[in-house]
Length: 340
Image 1 (cartoon, rainbow, N blue to C red):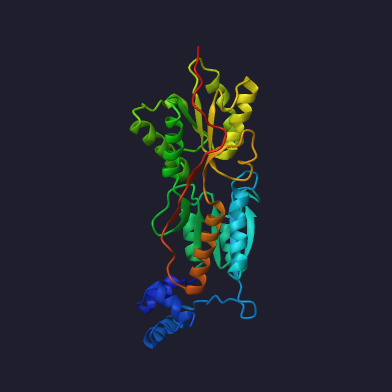
Image 2: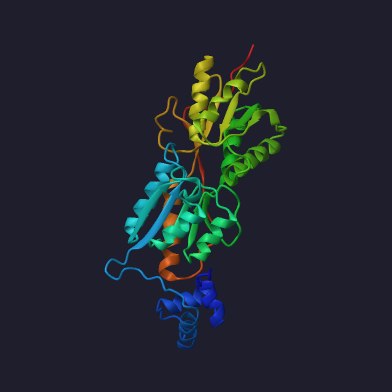
């Protein structure tokens, strides 16, 4: 089966950059007549199908895949995506990653090919696995790809939006050390993920700089879910239990709250707890949760701006973007209690 020509093929045949080819195809005025002529000739030669937006609506179609909505993270990210799409003259078609058969589940290469055929003009993948096949599928479809909070580290050619996870891990741990804690656990994050690995590295860095040797027995990996927080029961049953727990997400922190409740331990009198996200519910939990704030709505907005700019402007995608985290101190942390 003959491969469908892409914008990269057109650019190569015309001897120009992909950005210049896109500008010529979209009748931009900031490209020379000679370049336009070469690109048009390459389009005709290769049989490249030019993707156009509706002249009547001028709407950019963004196809969004989000890992799931049953947490304190996703709703705020999605709110930013939807609001920015509306303000940018775009429409967001949202799917959950869990849905559908595995081969064609949202975000898979087969799904991306189908979506491109149905008019998708940019993909935004939120906290999902992105493989070389995923990136290749977007390139073959000539559809810009933006990844928000990538699970794994991606090549420099992929546009990403994330937060300063390492710095957030440092700030959370420094806060607990500053209160006098020395046995600080880290639970609930996937250390092999981009975000989880950076948060764990920040935790380790802050401990070492405080002269505290990291204890691998106090690190319990997970997947940022509430169920991961329940694993704190095992840690808290130990004779030399941790006096503070830094959680990979707010959802994990609420699981830790439940674990403490089951064991008759009080937060923060017996155990200090820090979350990560400052998602919905952090400021109404009992006690109100100290957490590292990710500007989740802003991250969603930045992903949309990046995608729309690539569609409308025809230029290269923006370099990786990181927005600053901030420690929000509430009621779930305190100095460690004196033990008999």
